Structure formats: C-alpha cells, structure tokens
Image (tube, rainbow, N blue to C red; front, side):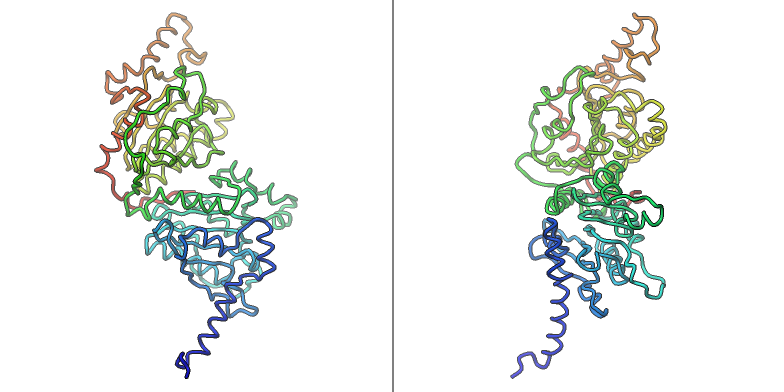
Length: 497
C-alpha cells in the first residue's frame, strides 16, 4: 500500500531539487573554499543563526535554468540571533562566483521587503563578482535591492560582512549598512582588477585595490578580523546592542555588573592635560564588565566610537583619545563620530560624550581635508540628537572641539559633568597661538582657564564637578534620570553613507 497516497513521485522530484541546491557549487568548489580557510555560504548562515533556527527562502531559484544554478548563487532566509528574528543573505562564491543573476536580484529585494514589513534586522554576507555577465536576458523593469536598503536605513539595523572578494553591485551593501566587518583576506571595490585594467589601463591586485588597509583607510569598513567565524561572532555581538527596529526601545541586558561602583581611573588618566593616555582602558573600566565594543578603531583614531552596556542599558560612546595627536579632532574622526551618532539616534541609544581635546585640527592639510565641513556636520548631528545625551569634560576642551563633543549650554544634555582641574578656552593660553604678549597676562589667563571646573560649576555650566572615581556612578545616575525617555526612537530621516 502506498503510504504517500500518490504523492511519491512529486515529493521525490522536489526532494531531488532541494538536495541539488544544498550541494551548492559541488564538492570540488566547496573543498577549494575550505582550503582558503573560508566557510561556505550555508556554513556562514548556520554560524550566524541560533542552532536549527534557519528557514530558507527561494532555495529553488535557478533550478529551471539549463544547467541549474543552485539557489541562483545566493542563499537567503531568516532565523534567530540570540532568540530574536533576523533576515540574512549569503553570496555563494562556489556557484558562478557568487555573481548576481535575475533570480538572485529578486531574492535580495525580497529580503529588504521582508525586513521593512516585519521590522527585523538584515545581514548580508558578501563574497561575489557583482552582476552576472552571462545573464543576458531581455532587460526590463525589476525591483532593486539598493532602493530597498536605502529605505531601510535607520528603520532596522543593517550589517554587512565582507568575507572574500566583493565587487560591483554586491559590494554596495557595505556603504549602505550601519556596520561593516571584513576578514583579513577579503577585498571590496566598485570594479575588480580585470575591469580596472580594461577601463583605465591600471594593473592592480585585489589587495591594492580594496584590501583591508585600503577599505579601512577610506572608512568603507569598520573592523577587520582574522576569519569568517570571528566576523560572524562580531555581527551577533553588534546586533545585541540594538533593538530589532527603530520602533522598539533599545535593549536592556541584565548581568552581575549593572550596579554602582567606584572605578579605578586615577591610575589611567594623568592630571596633566599635556600628558597623553589611551581612552579605551578608561571606557572598559567604567562600563559594565566585558561589554565594551569599539567600532572602527583604524579610522579617525583620535575619536573612539564604542557600544557598551551601562547598568544593563545599551549606550553609544564618543570619546576623544589623547594618545592620538592629543585628541585633536580631524576630518576623519569627525565624519566617523557623526555617522555613529546618527545610527545611535535612529535606534534610541543614549549617547555619552567624554571630552579631552585641544580642539579641531588646524593647518593647510586639515583645511584641504574639509575639517570645517566635517566638524560642522558632527556638531549638527549631536545638536539634533533625540536621545538622552550625557557629557563629561575629563581634562581639556578648546574652541570648536568642545562644541562638537556636546559641551554646549542649553543643548539638551541630561547631565553635564566635569573632572576637577579641567582646562577650557578658545585657545590654550600657554600656546603661541594665544597671542598674549605680556607674560603676566598670559599667566593670568592660564590660571583662569585652569580654574574652569570651579567657575563652570559656580555658573551651572556644569551640573557637578565629580571625583573621577565616581564617573560610572554619575553616568548611571544620569541614565536613570533619562529612563522615562527610554522608548522607541521611531524611524528618522535615514543614515547617509
């Protein structure tokens, strides 16, 4: 007796199609991928999602081509990351080089459509050759995934992992994403070396064209990690700091280190404002234990941008790093911080500013880099923040360097704090730029600048002058005050590349 009630042939045929799709580009190509130390597209998605939670969409796209193109070179679907639904798509470099055919293009748009509709994050894992040259079907009007991505900006978190050579259309997912990680052997570019040679005559390698050094220096990617597994783990960790969409409040993470405690920062921050020190160990000491995630450290390094949990609350941190040119804010640092703040604001993360800088960069090179425009953009972004804003002046802040770090009167700060003996002013009085010829007058102005903590507190420019060891407690108190504002930010105007 037929237990399948006549369904046997149809079920067998479709099972064969599914099995073929799971074989991807075949054993030889998969072995070659593994020999490079890289996971396959399906292994990457399995690592991204909680075990057993992946549901594939469009697996049979490309099945009717002759010969079949398994999953049309793009494996896509949804699953759970730390229990929350997430959509993702992975280019399959073992199938026609991970190139984008008509079916894969439709699948990409379907992902953006679902992300917008269901309000869940979207992750792309890219390693592909861009549009498929052999896909020469009749041109027509088709939905575009890039438009879908632009519409998603600031609505749901967007993450891109560059896990091999990524060219053309597929590479555009990176600059349209909120967070981009690449592996050390990966590369990303608008056009690959063969096309560059054909179009311009330039002979260049993948690494020279868009390897990690180039991509980081251009600000295209945030972080470089050794391998696929580390990149995927970084994506999971990043998503833990964000709500599923801008319509939900920022997450709260319970843990053993969420309460108040004194912090050992006196040994980390020298009182002399002319002595450099790295800010990252200070941040690690102050936030919930083990929660600090520094983003884009290789670009605009005089400002550190980081995610962390503070009393269990997810927060965004923008901090000057005096170990890099004394914390001077250059165009790259300002651009990095401005975009980071836009992401934080879109998803309702409170923003903590730690200022310790001698101002914005000066000089002909700085002006040619557009420092005025970049610094003004950072100022405008911090001014327009809808989320709680907390400011601390650690040692010094001069000129526009104080304004871009949210040390402005009547600027919507929840709390504005200062360490003892901070130094403020338009310019350091002790520098030649101060243009004070009289030594006595210069000494007087220097004393006034160095007494900014007391004068600021006396005039309510600062809510309080705190013992540096109380930094964590003071910020926690400010965050507690702003808890009534802890709600969904709501979609904003989008985050520009």
